[in-house]
Image (cartoon, rainbow, N blue to C red; front, side, top):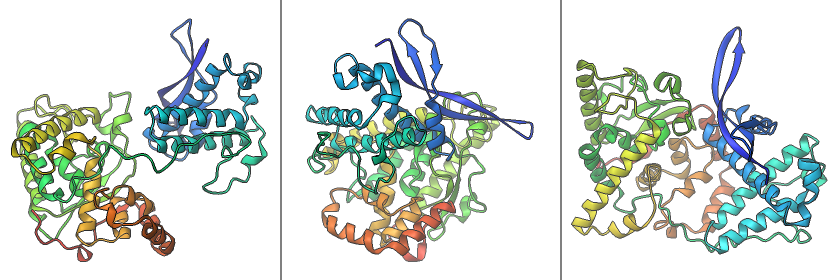
Length: 440
C-alpha cells in the first residue's frame, strides 16, 4: 500500500464580522510511505457535514473519522488480494458498492470469533458505515438506489446475496462494569475519602461524577464561576438543596496553550444538579480552602480554574485527571483487599474507570425512587434508552427486556419531555420525587 488515510486534529479558522474564530476540529488526511507529510483529504467535508456543522463533540468527530478511515484502509489493502476490490484501483471511491461494505462487516465478524472485537462493535461500525455510504450517495460519488429510502433499524448490507456475516448479539458478556453494585453508596463514600488522601485535587471532581453524573471532560472544564449562585456558598448546601453546575466548553479559558482538546471536550452543555449529600459540601469547602491557600502563595497559574495540580498550580487536563483517578482506584482496591470486602473480586477483576461515576449516579437515583424519565433528565440525556445501558447488570435481572421494550413503547409523551429538557440544557434532580433519607 503506497498510502493510507489518517485522522488528524486541526484548528478550523473562520472570520465573523472581522473577528477570528478558531475551533478544534477533526479531519481526514492522506499519508504516503515515502514522506512524513500528511495531505488534507476532501473527505474532511464528510466530517464537517455530519458532525462539525452540527456542533458534535470533538470526541464524536474523531469516532466518525476513525471508523471511516478504518474502512477505507481495509479497502486499500484488499485491492492487492481480493478481485472484488480491484475496481477501486482505477475508480477510487467512485467504484465503491455494497459488496465492499459487506466484506468489511464480515471481516469485523471474523475478528469477534478471535476475541479481538465484541459483537456489539460490529453493529456499531455498521451504523457508521451506513452513514458514510449515505453521504457518498448524496454527493453523487456513488449511485446506490438502496441507500435512498432506508428504513430505521435496517441495513443495506444485511442481504443474503451479499453474503454478509454477522456475529450473534446475545453471546457477549460485558467485562466492563457501570456501577459499584448494591453497596454503591458506602463504596462511593470510601472512594472519595481515599481520594482526599491519595489525590485530593480531584476529590471534588469525583463527588461531581458519582453524585452528579458529570463526565471527566466536563469536570476539568469547570471554573470557579461554574456554580449557579448562591449555591457556590457552601452554607447553602444542606440536605434538601442541590448544588447546580453550569457545564460548558471552557477550553479557551482554561487551556489556551493546549492544541489538542480531545480529553477536555464537553459532550452536553447543560445545567447539572448534584445530589445534596453532606460529603459534597464538606469536600467543596476543603477544596475551596486549598485553592485560597494556593492563591495566597501565588502558585495558581490560572485563577479561573476550579481543578488544579496542588503542587504545580497548573490547570488539570482530562488526561491528568484520568491518571490521578487510576491512582485513587488502585489505593481503593488495595483497601478493599485488606478488608476482604465482599465486592473486591468484582471491582478488581472487571474493567472500570472515571465513567463509572455516571453509572453510580444513575443507580442511586433509581434506588431512591426516581423513574426512568426523571433519571434521564437528571443525567442530561436525550432519550430514555441511554439510561438502560447504565443499569448495573447485577440488578438488571429484575428488569426483563420485554418490560424495558414495553416501557419504551408506552412512553412517547415522556420521551418528548426528556428531549425537551435535553434541548433546554437542563439536568435537574426533582427532590420532591426522590427519597433522600440516610444520605451522607
